[in-house]
Length: 299
Length: 299
Image 1 (cartoon, chains in turn brown, cyan):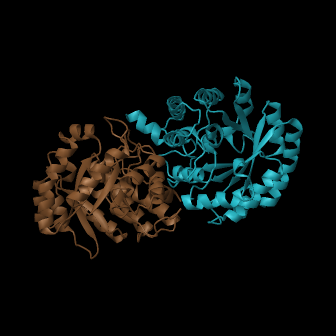
Image 2 (cartoon, each protein chain N blue to C red):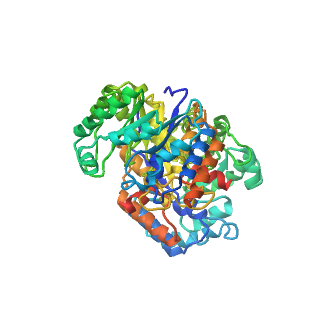
Image 3 (cartoon, rainbow over the protein chains, first blue to last red):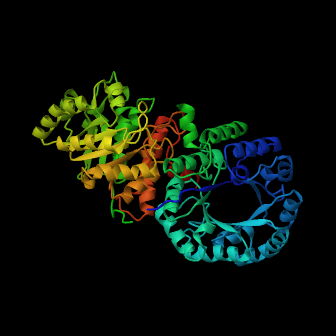
């Protein structure tokens, strides 16, 4: 067993998290969340998404959030840009890192974005070209890497070519997402073994949802496979712990707690992180989805 | 990595779980819970505790529960017996397996049971002798194995002699409990490495609480160390997921989900187990503490 000495966290709460909360929140609250997160030591934050507010009202005002942020040195503020229109809006807002996403499941791609995986990758070509021309980095997401709501099981062999294609198109990193949260530790290890044979592991990230309570174990399994970048969401934003069908990202607090326990550097102050999570949970009017935060509040 | 091919679960919900729920429930509801659990395939169930109902009102009526049970072949119905009086009551109720517990932390032992670890072990001697004379098996618990609310960190070197002493006194198995839930995967592995050098790993069990969201990862870490017996609590009984200070055992459902994902045999029917957990959660008037149960209820 040889674990990474340090791990980089990509905080997706302001985007993947808030996008899946029922209630949109104000631009000021979003800005405060991002500021709190950078104060806690996070250096990679996915701030918003440039999509039609008709589709995703929770992501309305992303340009205003970017405009209101005071950028801190060494911090990357990224945005999801599903299409060229979104990229243009992001560029106009001064965004310097964007993300695109494809599915590992053909059934999910068809039902979710109404095209094949191959077609979705082709649609990224103009985005990649434009981003490259602007010197903007692009991160790739692959969803449904350990399970799909429509096709069920997803094999690592289906994930590998999608990850490889995103790298070949110019992504600097590909995040493999168990967006359904059904994956377990053994499948996670196999995923990184198989995909890692085609994409360098240093370019891979793990993105786990805690729907079935497996996310922390899956992170540990990933660490054992040499993965050193993980996505997470402060307070487990995106999956209300009390609601049916909670599907949230693993809580950043719980992930940092694991990493600290393993002696792995993250550069994050857990107390400040917990405070950031408690504040945004109060804004949303719900308890934190982080068990660490709840245990500390009780202690 | 070589995982066990099969794992034995010790269901502690009716005892460790219900003991830590605010509301005592009826004997009939306890009996139904135990029957539901055996129907789901559990073969080791800690049914109750023989202690003064003044101290632990939730455990009142344990004798009545044993009297009302219809024993099934191959199922062990155990009881916690902290003292000789409790053992005599358990024997009178026909109990054939009992459990005793000691702490790995001197500070916890003093504050919780008002004596040193050594003294607590001496007090077990008449219990062990009487149990042996009756041909009744005794299981040992060690609490605070990865952390103590009073002394903080607990080293594996402090746990090993307590586990070894319990084995030397005649326990057939020792369950190492991270009762505070603060442990992480690396410390868990080290715990079993150190204790496993003095007690055969086949005689050790893992008992994890999910207070900090680490329990499933700690089980996975234990599996990697060759541990094949785990304690858990259906519906995460003992730690209300919505309350501050939730300190419950790992939910049996989430543990079985992990083990099934790893291809490890448990003999348990997850659907029936989830149903058992939903029923007892309804009796208690709260949502299940199992993420698997909540995800399934939503799906």
